[in-house]
Amino acid sequence: MSNEPILQVNHLLTQFHTDAGNVKAVNDVSFEIKNGQTVCLVGESGCGKSATAMSIMGLIDPASGEVSSGEIIFEGKDLLKMKKGDLRRARGNDFAMIFQEPMTSLNPVLTIGEQIIEPLMEHKALSKKQAKEKAIELIELVGIGRSREIYASYPHQLSGGMLQRIMIAIALSCDPKLLIADEPTTALDVTIQAQILDLLRTLKEERNMAMLLITHDLGVVAEVADYVIVMYAGKVIEHASVVELFANPKHPYTKGLLQAKPVINQRKEKLYTIPGQVPNLIELQPSCYFSDRCDQCMSICKEKNPLMKQLDNGHQVACWLYEQEVSV
Ligand SMILES: Nc1ncnc2c1ncn2[C@@H]1O[C@H](COP(=O)(O)OP(=O)(O)O)[C@@H](O)[C@H]1O
Ligand SMILES: [Mg+2]
Image 1 (spheres, rainbow, N blue to C red):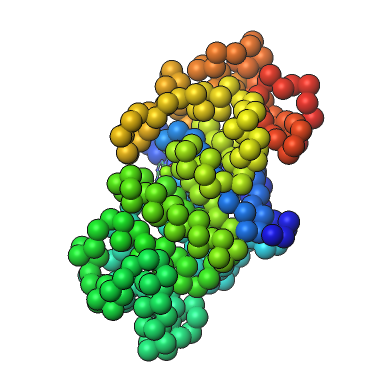
Image 2 (image 1 turned 45 degrees about the vertical axis):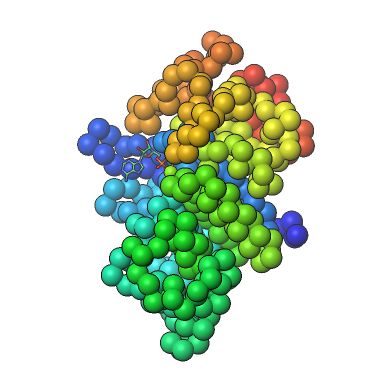
C-alpha cells in the first residue's frame, strides 16, 4: 500500500438553501484517504455524512445547495475546478459511489444488463458485445449465479441484497481507484448486510481500491476501517486509526458513541443513548456544537468552537479538553 493520498478534502463547506435559512451540512471538513485505505465516516443521522459524499461526487443538486468553498483533490487535481465533462469522466472511471437504497438508483424500466453495460460503453469504449461479456463477468464477480438470467431481469424482479450487489457491480465496472459507499447495507436484512460487507471487503482487497465507507454502525467500523472520521453537526470532531479510536477515544461524543449499545435486532437505525439532539445546522452558535449534550462541558465550550488538535499516533480531536495540544 502506497502512502500517497488519493483524496484530500480541505476545508469543505457545503450548504443547502432552505426557506428557514442556509443549512451548513458540511462545515469546514478536512480529511484524506490514502491509496488502498478504508476510511469510515461515522456519526448520527443528519450530521453531514451523505452531503460530504455527494460533494466529493459532484452530485449536490444545484436546485437545493452547493459546495461553497474548499478543495477536493483527487490524485492531485481539484475536482471543484474541473470542467463538467472531465468530472463526469472521472466519476465512474476514477471514483464511484454506491447508495443506501439500491432500488432508487436503478432505472425500473431498463434491464439489469442494460444498466451495467451503459457505463462500460461510455467510459471504457467497449462495443455492446464486449460490454455484455464484461457485465456477465461482473454479475458473477459480485457473487450472483445465473448471471445470464439476471442480466435480462428488471430491478423489481430482484431482492434488495441482489440489487445492492448489482450496484456494486456497476460501481466496479470501470475499476475505480476509490469507492464511496453511503450506508450500503442499511436497507438490508442483517444476514445480507454481513454478506455485502464481506463482498465489499474482498473486492476492495483484491483490487487495492481505496474506500470511503459511511455508516452509523460501529460494529462495521471495527471490522473494516483503517481510519475513522467522526462527524458531528457538519464538522469532523475526531480522526484516528481504528485501533487508536476504539482503544483511546478522546472526544466525549466519540466516547458516548462507543458506549451506546445498539438495540438487539434493530436493523434500521441504531439508537444512540447520548441524551439530547444534534443542533439546528442553520443557526449555529459560536460554541462547541456538542456542548449542550456534553457531560464534560466547560465555560469555554459555550463561547468558542474548538480547533482541531494533533495528539500522538496521528490522532486528531476538536475538543477544549485538549486545549494544550498543537492545532492543525
Ligand atoms: N437537499 C437538501 N436540502 C436541505 N437540507 C438538506 C438537504 N440534504 C441534506 N440536508 C440537510 O443537511 C444536513 C446533513 O444531511 P446528510 O448529509 O444527509 O446527513 P447524514 O448523511 O449524516 O445523515 C441535515 O441537516 C439535512 O437535513
Ligand atoms: Mg446519509
